[in-house]
Image (tube, rainbow, N blue to C red; front, side, top):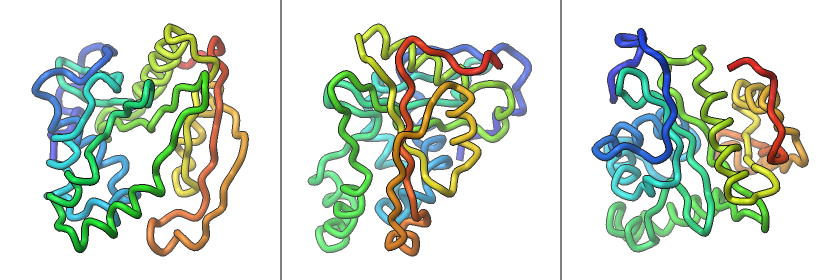
Length: 211
């Protein structure tokens, strides 16, 4: 895995759009660290999952946080039919084999979310554990919100699972409001969570000023 950011955590965190060239593997590691438990049934083992994610990233569908030139956080988003993480059905089958790959495709289909007209869908935030507590998540959210406004979207949408209350608390501080919760207890044994809450934030609003 990528080195812990706390070893060089002396500078100012900066935010940029797009994954820096050459940082795809690092981005995939951060993404897997944040979402590996959720995506594990579809992409495990990690030694296959991380290279697969790195090889199929859409680098222009992320905002990134850098500390001393090192990637320490990112937020993916879906816009114009393209999301941060990609990979066709054929790519999944080539990586995992046809027999096991079909099962994995069915699981991945459960995570598909398409934005409604006027929506930008945020795919979640991944922050290096050594850089947490520095407001990185808030910086990433505000940059995504700014991007949504530039794209004439009316709202930012995201989904948060019931086993991640810390993330939900951050989203609520940044102005997101829960609009519905879908309970899926039949998926708890397979995916590790039993409910997904959809949250919206109107473009042009801000959360608590704790940056």
